[in-house]
Image 1 (tube, rainbow over the protein chains, first blue to last red):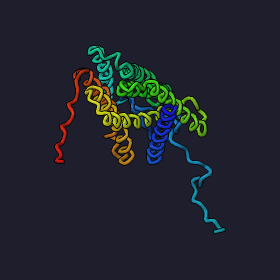
Image 2 (cartoon, rainbow over the protein chains, first blue to last red; image 1 turned 30 degrees about the vertical axis):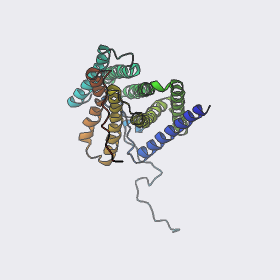
Image 3 (cartoon, each protein chain N blue to C red; image 1 turned 90 degrees about the vertical axis):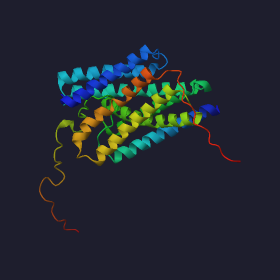
Image 4 (spheres, chains in turn brown, blue; image 1 turned 120 degrees about the vertical axis):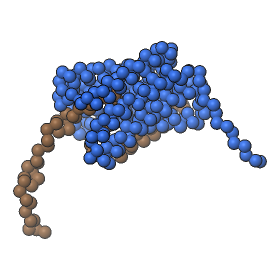
Length: 72
Length: 232
């Protein structure tokens, strides 16, 4: 029983370590992906922008310069 | 379609993958290192498939993106099992196969659950994003497991040359991609270099495994380092 619990503990340690490492790498990265399988050219990820340039969000400034907030 | 240099690198990498399997068969190492060869075979098939899809649909197409990421998820699972194959060979004299199997299933299940938990919060394309997330997470799990295995090899004073070379090649492969990722983020202006370096790194593993299967005998052993004479 203790051996099985040791296995579970080791698995959790490896999983936590790997996910922490991934979080650190992705947080400090530019959003690109790590692909370690072969030399094929990586495609554009369809769920990230879909290849087209992201539009300007209309609820942020809308192109015009932001006004001075009178309550500050 | 990729440029000429990239195509040459890709072709070279694909030939090395096939070469690794051929060398393993010729040196009667296919069954002993079954999952390593299965992974190399899968990589070869995936490369050919990706080329066909790329030729037919083009790089910006959704078809290529989905084929690439789904095949990548399968390949990463294959690489995970190849790593477990190496684990079972390193620990074969300790009779812990049962615990290794339990650990492997738990770790794969845990990674899949974690991936699902992440994408369930943030994505509506669950299946596609799950394949991508699982692939990324398993890559990091593989990275950690490889270093743990290397630590075990050092601790157990393993002397089987071929086994050590296979594990070291895997460590170099994972580390090279991690370093490439870090450098790409540190120096994004050198895109001209990264576009050739990243696919070239994919040749490390098949080349190293091919060399190990072809030139290193299964019975070869590393001579232990000489003991230092310490005055008492």
